[in-house]
Image 1: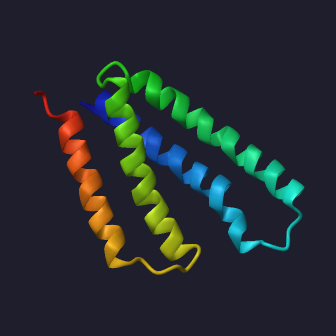
Image 2: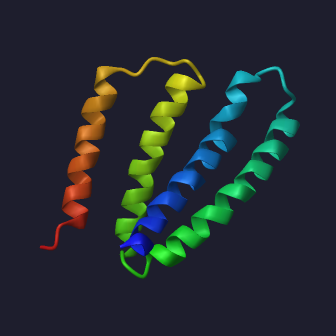
Length: 113
């Protein structure tokens, strides 16, 4: 059971790095774009150090579509927290409605039909 949870933990850590690599620079708009790109690449290296093992281990228990779906849900959760706490952006009601539909997708993908 712990081994099945490990991919979720690793994907979560990976997504934290990914979110900072992709969006963290938005607070530093005056930084030169080349510098931002290089820093983002450096952060992305750490993302891959967690993402690759997450998928490798996760594929023992889940198929690729399930892994991708997990990753997308984790990404949305991590990004939502990031955008509110780090970027100080508002979380709107329509985001919640969109997430509801994504949860429906998760149900369809993980259900054994």
